Length: 403
Image 1 (cartoon, rainbow, N blue to C red):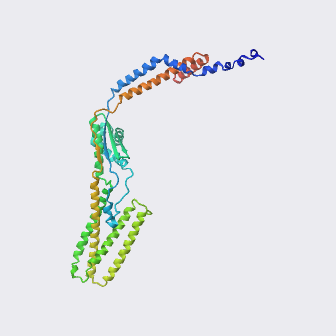
Image 2 (tube, rainbow, N blue to C red):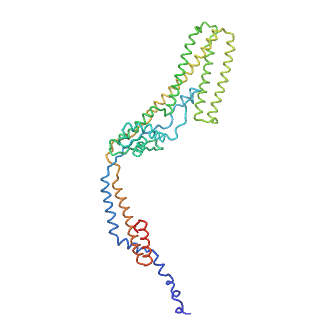
Image 3 (cartoon, rainbow, N blue to C red):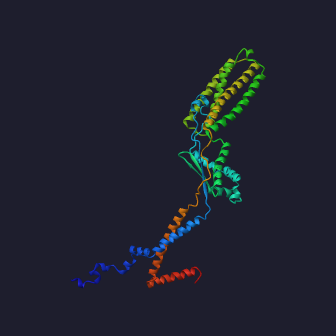
């Protein structure tokens, strides 16, 4: 059987591919031809739109950005060696350090207290043309950016405005209002301890003065007593004061430690030992002072109360001084690194970026346009496609109400 007896489509395998298959394939050469045919439009069009966008950007009111940076306190103060010398009060006032101090200070700046202070200080309701504070705060949040760097502890405040001087004043105003807020709050660990012991000192001092007055009111001189209770009572009073201090320490530790923490259990053990020691001393004191007259009993009670408050006052005074020293070492709560100054150049609009984005967007849109136009022209050349396009145009007119 010769090749001449085979059907034409079998004698030549290449002929098995019909013309329909080849027509459906997209040729890169055809696409390139379309680009070349419309090269002037694809080049001049984006350039023209880019120049127009550049010209319009010069008409936009410039916006200036002022920046200020400050450093937040890092970690706790170092006074462990001095606190260890105070025995039962060694851990009093200690608290866990902040996980992210910078984020906390950012929250302070964004608080309603600081924002409202800025609104009143710079008359922002009139400047931003808002009737309510809540809308003014939203407008302020759009023009002011506050960020924190957790690695170096630096907080950055950026303020945008059409007036460069006002932008600088607004950025610095954020930091100044933050400092005023911190003046009303105890933020650092040293400040917290200072305020805590300041209150304890005031209370203990009042009790000490009252105990001294009551002791003096007994009218009994210790030299007139056969039994001088000073040495014995001072020991009892000091142990009693140590028990009180340990109880305050435990109540403070409950704020940042669980009951199962080793430090908390150790503090409980120390408190139990102090109470046992106090019970022994009180029993011995009661036995040694059995049978004194009523006047001496009253004197002993008053003297014990006096020495107890005196010991507490001394302990609290030491802790108060330590807190003051630590607070002085910390210096200012925040340390300003860069003070915002009126910027010399505007930050917005970015003219080059606007022109470039307009050029690229126009080029992409025109390229899509010429491809779609070429596809429609090719489809109109076949009767079937022309009929489909006709139905599509009719449906489009009907959707627009023009049918």
